[in-house]
Image 1 (cartoon, protein in one colour):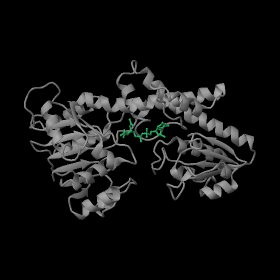
Image 2 (cartoon, protein in one colour; image 1 turned 90 degrees about the vertical axis):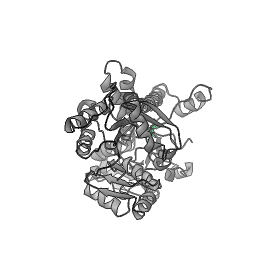
Image 3 (cartoon, protein in one colour; image 1 turned 90 degrees about the horizontal axis):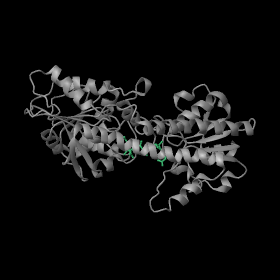
Image 4 (cartoon, helix red, strand yellow; image 1 turned 180 degrees about the vertical axis):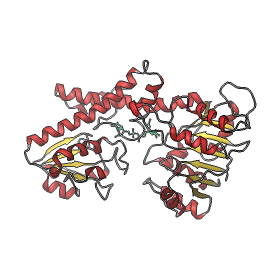
Length: 412
Ligand code: SAJ
């Protein structure tokens, strides 16, 4: 194969299918037999706009196959998870395992690219693993001028869930080579399908850039979330405050919500903190503010439940953001689960992006219902996610109910 993509998740599968659609011969590798079987049958195991067709077409054209084994390839792309471990420290064990799986197969001239969001220094760690397994190869090292047998680069993914297939092609890409020659080699792959600019730098800078992008967003959302909690204390409408402040030419405040979710923004800032714990004060505090916002939201819903003894509450949405089926690190899900465990029979969940309540609700008595059914029986309505399916709600639909809109959706 020309390209082996290790990890067929939210990034790996769309990238593998896209590369295949641009004519590359691609093998997608995953540890899960179920994922491999689904892909080989021409399907996608995740929901993402335009992905099903992309995978189906690539499998039909035989430019994409999937396997649980790493093949020999010209390019290896690592797109495995890098979760948060104990004490908010990064866990790069899947990247290390991918490097160990690639090392015995790699031939001189091949290029290894890491796309997984990673703590700074991970590319150097991958170089060390390959060098250890393959003493016969000259592996590129930071600052070394020796001509290497393989290339190694860090090229962070930066696509937005829900728009992955489009953003893979149109976003600018940062290509961080361990050496300049490595960046040049990695660019052969990216320039074949990226319509945005390809920007060259070192692997270490590229690793930092990715963490900084998501920390920037987290800090800005934390500002909006903190404003919403300040507004509750001083008794003003936060949505009015933000709308009007944003009419200043140099102010652009983001939207408060029930907290920050997803596997990126709620995680990556901790990788930056782990690299410089004493210096990263604002980044750490932003994380804490956003986590606190979920606790604050839950407390406010509990107060509403007390205000209407025995009344039912409709929780609108469980996903981590609108119009996706992704519940990872979702504050809406965490809040719903916590409430279900204490007030199960009073909880009605409306989530058009699932057919069953997630397992964490089992045995609580909480029910998954349609929006219409929820509006018929609930005395309290809480908007946790601004799904398009909820946007037509009118004052008439909500008449006589206590309403808590954590997203400002009904204002918009
Ligand atoms: N959110 C708010 N208020 C806002 C904006 C977002 O509360 O004004 C919340 C969302 O509801 C959600 C969370 O923040 O819970 C994160 O959503 P998001 O849309 O900001 O970001 P993600 O996690 O879907 O994708 C991010 C993107 N990064 C940036 O925008 C800097 C994406 O480009 C990255 O590729 C992705 O992380 C990733 O994979 O790292």
